[in-house]
Length: 78
Image 1 (cartoon, rainbow, N blue to C red):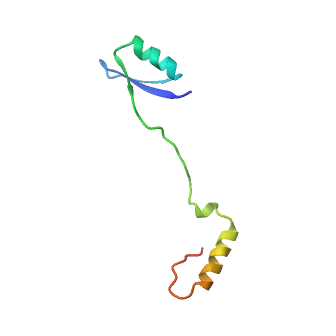
Image 2 (cartoon, rainbow, N blue to C red):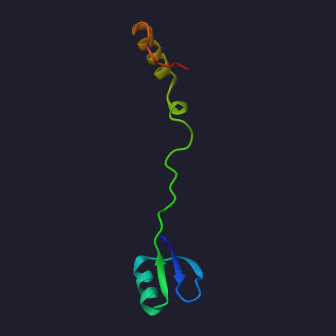
Image 3 (cartoon, one colour):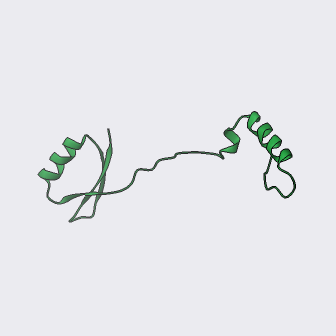
């Protein structure tokens, strides 16, 4: 279930609740002093570098491309 942050307009008290959207509608309808704080979810999409997740064959392919590309190339093979 999603979590929501509610703020009491009178006391500025912050509450975090976990409920369905239908239950949230009921809570907000019953208490006019409560308002929902809109905030973006915290999502981690990637941890670490992308190159650390590539197989060794990728570095071999980059080496072959670098070797055949001639002088002045900017291909970094690690």
